[in-house]
Length: 474
Image 1: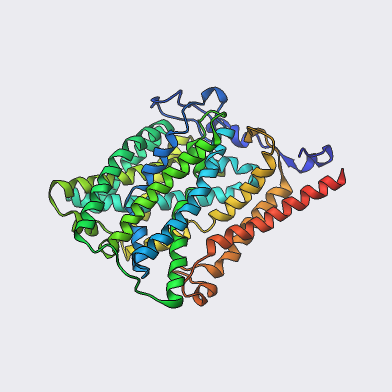
Image 2 (image 1 turned 45 degrees about the horizontal axis):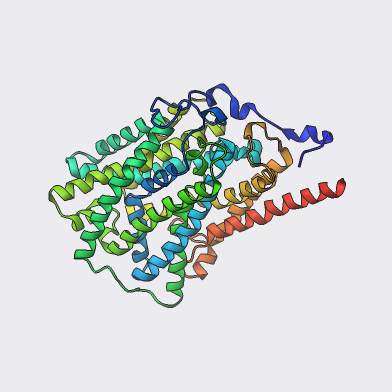
């Protein structure tokens, strides 16, 4: 609904927030254009759109096929669920998270804009808060995947861990610097390489390990562990929600929404089901979250060395996504640096976090980081979806640079975002903090779902009531 003239003082169009000079630049001209992409958060012009939705399958499959997914699956066994219950909990969480990412990915062709930049339509100037969280999350995810890549390369080459990490981060920083098109091409190649390698890993695992393990907890403890595993799997998939449109924003506006959704969902779901299933089957062999567990399955020789090399390469495939989206998040905060430089900044800061993860109880720190860096995302999704459904009604395309954001709506979005996070705290379960509800429910963590529902009720209720009052006013 268009605002009346009397509300002009409340409106902030802020076109410069997306179209300032550092946020524009050179875009790839088509498939195979590997020149440096300097274009940042500004909407991609219709004349610069190219590609087909089918590319989204590989760009969402390859980044998930890494040891982070394997170790996440292994957590189900560490929690005492056993194979079948662990597999069921993982599939439920993965489906729920992948559905969200698939839906948000359809916004890219309709706006030509990345996920965080277009969130300005809902949050206005307060978008700096979720953008800052996204930037920090990108660094954290860079560290999680870079940790295992560094371990693998260190063992393979017999070099110090920190040197191996520098090599992994250097390669992914190079790809992130070049940007969108090189990332898409890299993921297409990695999809084949990683799938074949992890199939070999799975075959070796089944051949020498008792895969179908029973649950080791019972009663309320079993229910609590099951819910926690659903949340862990959900957190892994939904963590990409704030990245979703970043990798579909160059697609033409007329791209089929169903195909964009389907290829994104299938790429993510099949990859996560595949690698987390391997982790659940491996169980205690990889429960220490290190490459030693992998070596115990694969053995030495050429095959073992090849797997270590591919693990390091897989870390690059996932890390470049974090570097790229992190670069857009930093610009969304308002930092006026060119996108390639912003991507390098994310890569450099991840190095220190990797050394911290490596310096203690890796499994424990891994689980804490995995949960803590994503608790804010469901509320973010609820807010932007409510705004999008209202704003895009009856429109095939939306240009975020031309959209008006009511200041009151922007404040309401931030309030809903913050209150929802606070409401979720009693339901959280990490070793750093365990909320009273989670304690009473034997470790069950439903904080992500509480976070989403509270934000949906607060912000959705606010926007509905405001729309209704405006309708009555006319």
